[in-house]
Image (cartoon, rainbow, N blue to C red; front, side, top):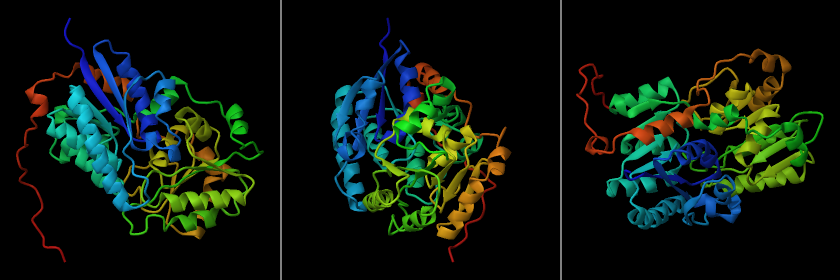
Length: 396
């Protein structure tokens, strides 16, 4: 019997774990695969709910829990976290020597495992390359991971074309959809009728879910949050605030959310919502408001009205349920009123969702299970230069 291929999967937060879980389950079910799951960064932080515990609860054995998130709320702390993660992962990856490393999306901490794998000649597979989020450093991180990776699992046709335009060979690029949608197809989403009372959100009106993260390209990443809370002040619906990402500026946003909820009896702030509960909350919600990729990628699967604020998600593909608004309180209120209009919700029935059919995880697992682990995978080839590129123009 040949040696099982050892596939390492690194998760650094509750958000990417929810996306990765269907893939982890699919890999764990492959007899040819030895799954090495790693929980790092925010997973080990009490501030973010010590979410590393969910791996075991979901039947995914942890190979390592690495504490590397600096207890800081600055951009310097983010940079140092990358360094700490690199040191921790270098020791672990040197010891385990996986055949493949699987990463997802665009969190800045993901630069650490990718850099270590590059040095150790371990091929990298990357999920959700080719996406765009021009208002955050995530965009540069995602593109860097794409160029470091040897296999690409992209969610949409536009993303596939964008990765090809970056010079990646076509055989390396697989359009699979977004794996977070697999939860819906599998039917593991929590029942809103039981969930909402348990979360303290029972009310004749369905809740509005608020997902707001620091805008990391701005000098003050929390600056736009004030207009959001101003816009929501008179909202008659219950409000469910989700904790922001572990980025610089998060603590100010958390304090603003906690102060808002303290003065609004129908508002709740949640440190961590387990992924099935989060999907159940979206299923029972009236709308999603904020600047999270969840609004762009996941709310369309439920035909849930979504108010996307500011430039953080600029450039992403949009479905018909997305209502864009600038970071201005009046504009947000106007967009939210439209989102809560029953006529708008009714108009979304049968809408087209660009992010897949809920079978991404099985497609990803099949490629990882079967791709030849030879020199061709590790050695990336430069494509011929095109003759139709635009002429160089000096910047103004």
